Length: 260
Image (cartoon, rainbow, N blue to C red; front, side):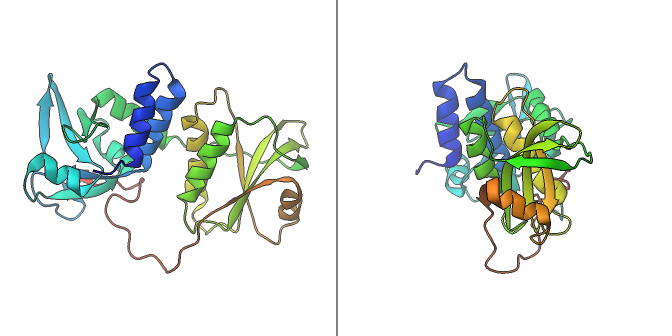
């Protein structure tokens, strides 16, 4: 079977067991991946009943990152639910269930115990704090590690259609505080919390210690947008070719499926 992005992230983590950044990148990839949760019965609405297996005294549900791998494991046509990794973590957290990824069918086979699932769900649920500050000076971004820029680029590439683009710049505020600002331009109304969360996850899972990144939202007509365009690093967000259809169960991290 062809290698998947999760395979590559798992291989990098296994090759550097003492590298926290590689481990965090794997969990970031897991959170953003579409996973196929093996079910004991067909889903009923937004309620699912997963198959549960006991491994060394702990209970695990089984998930695969391709249909071929799920079929290779079960050897038959089996019911499943397609969920994002983040929705699956939110669904399992607090239920005493771990996650078995690609068991027996891929080199990326990985057992994630219940406490690790709870940690991932808690990390993904973190909400950015809100504050009001006026930038007095903007300048080109400086001193940011390449791993953070790469993480931001990958995160924003998955935020299709939620904004036109974003600018990253160094900022000095009127109160003298300095930092870096990621300014989204023409964000879709209601998408602001998700975009802010995505930027926060890029920072968290990049492994940058004591990092901080401010997020703001502007219209293309705002004067500060022109200032950002003169000095900032631009990130383009993919634009949808057609209007999206109804969201499938498990695609909204704030409304994961229910266990039954």
